Image (cartoon, rainbow, N blue to C red; front, side, top):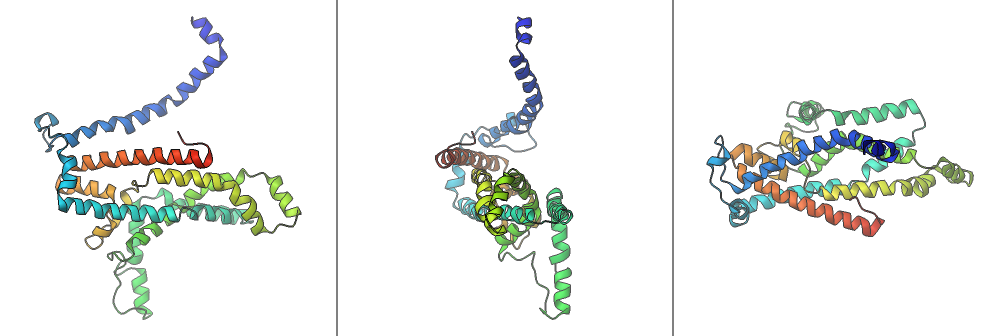
Length: 308
């Protein structure tokens, strides 16, 4: 039996390829599926530090409390408003990395192009704590902007840029774009590199200007990549992270900046509502799964192929 198996090169190749992806499968199981065991806390009246076996089983109590308690329901609706607003802004401006990659590709001086790409990509590798440290140095009451502005007479009193909740959704999008735009453009740069150069040369021979080449060749060629990324963002509409909003939140802007992930964290760490926060996370996961399936179905209808 062993001789027959190893005599078939296709089976041997399949076995080797499975061994290649086995470490990745183990990591996914350990870090993505094993933590789902924690969902059991949503069905108990959990009170740390006692073990779960000591706690009372309450069934769907915490799920019902999200809708029966008017104060809590109002909080959740406010959090969902913030989540939908910030995810909606990011989705609305999802074309920005594509446009940035197109113009970056049009830089003919290669050393300068590499410098711009490196400078815009580096912020992706720094933590949100360092991003807030930069923002604090620039925009706090004694920061660069207030110091220079008051010396120039632009305003009489320090402006509370970080403490104010005014335009906070758009401010968060600006910081997110500054941090991730260069990294997001890499995929579009790869798609642009895959465009047939003969097609571009033929267009230039026919008298097409640079803008016409971009409009009629470059953009149509990378639109499939754009649509795939947009649909993936739709599937993760309720997941816009926690770290950014956690470091930028304060007593003045908390109501407007608190998104769903941050609300779950604050609920668990601040008031000890571990069971309720777990129940909210379960509902969020279910909604995200529904969005993923709907997006996949929509992709099949529009593009003829889906993600799964």
